[in-house]
Length: 162
Image (cartoon, rainbow, N blue to C red; front, side, top):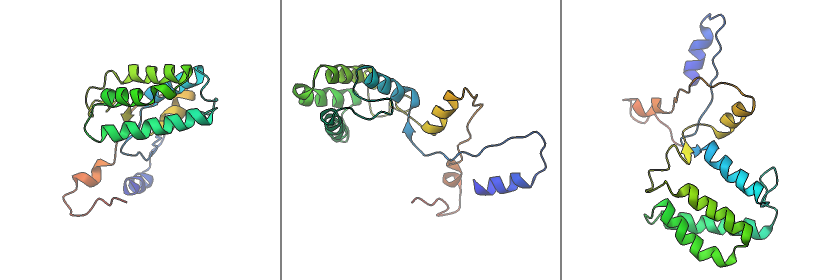
């Protein structure tokens, strides 16, 4: 990416604006997680900065996610993992927490197998960049994912993975 920027910087281009944004391979889908945040806020589980208002809720969410990912890693679907985890924790949930986790189950209904999350719960791109662009009401014309350049190279060991 730096090489592309270096070459383009040497060109004389009037009225041309090009931004380089570094993207990760996988990030959360801003709309999916925005819905979850709005629900947490609506139910009074978090403040406007998405900080849990009760230690009990924070610990439940932490343990719920830990158990959920443990079940997913055994090959269960997202919805199956979420339902089983909900059953494990349902006696510990208050009314608002039950409403939140029920909402999460609704959102996960569409995810039949572990590959269904692509484009629904996660994206290739920058969540923070998209959130900021949406707040500023900026149009994003497109994204060029330069991550694949290293993978497409025929030169051995050209892609360094930290």
